[in-house]
Length: 153
Image (cartoon, rainbow, N blue to C red; front, side, top):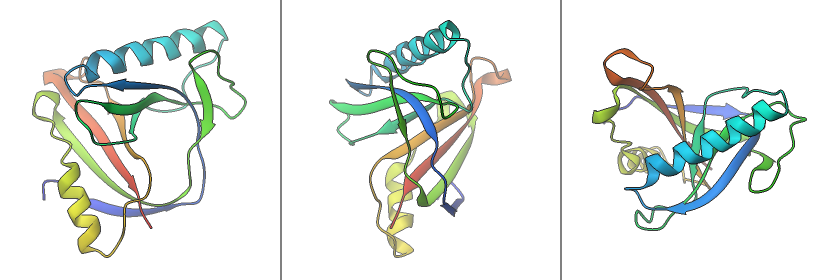
């Protein structure tokens, strides 16, 4: 396995602002850019800012019809507007794996992570997430740091 996986038992929820979209794997970068830009513009308009790294939540694994949710963690009192929704994430056990390296070489390896989960006698539960802790457009040599999270039971 190319990632070190670890179990997190997080008994907190996070408030997030997000936009739900259906896209393809090919169009995912443009879709994410659009969603992140709209949320940042909204936050700027109300004098707020993200409380953490941007993320994408994958509601399915159909690469031609991906149901995603893209957004940012925010303070608890930030409300949504229009297509931008405000909600809380679930708490509980999660598997966390981190990729650090060149964005062009990034392969999320979700199948490998799911296999690790199965081998350790857990079951995936709900939505998987990718949190983008370092923007490859702002890092030397196009490097990024992406945390992949699968809630488990």
